[in-house]
Length: 224
Image 1 (cartoon, one colour):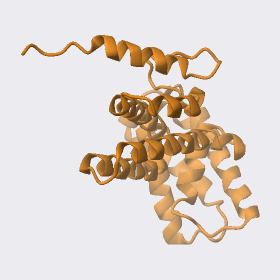
Image 2: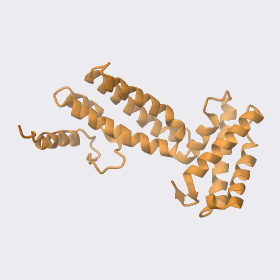
Image 3: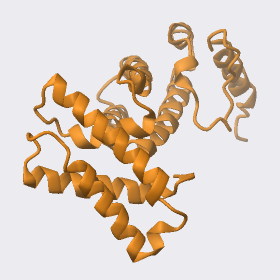
Image 4: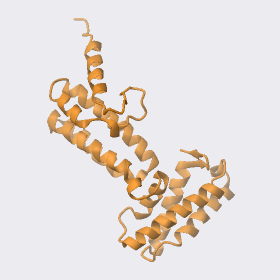
């Protein structure tokens, strides 16, 4: 028998999903990179999911989460725990150990947590780049007081500002002297961290921050 043409069904799914978006006017498109999950009306998606095409709907949500995660982890690699949790959900789905409805509900809740994480920099009163630095300095969890948290934020902000203004020149990664200046700048700023950062922890954070800067910044205006 010839293959069944399901293009009409998929167009219908696309149309219903487009209508599920909140009233901001955002429309789901395959070329959207990444899909803004924060603008999706999850309650509307839940209602549609209960009707039909459950696996197709689940796959679209999974694709949207994947795109969002890739973008968020590219900015802040300390979010790797979200990747691990997402992979656990997908592995559970692929293994057939949970039904489609249960996995879908877990994915919806996971997407909502991603939205909260994406807005966390506002709560912390930091930019996304500053938050990435702050997270590197405090994850895995460092036992610090509220006052010390403010000190760490101050160090992260000042260090990033200095690096971008003076050290992260064009093609800095290609020159040994430029790399050495970047590393020295990081070491000098992190030396201002609270005493709870032992010499061993200080060295580990210096290396982690340098690696983050090396991977993420090609130059002052070239954010990866």
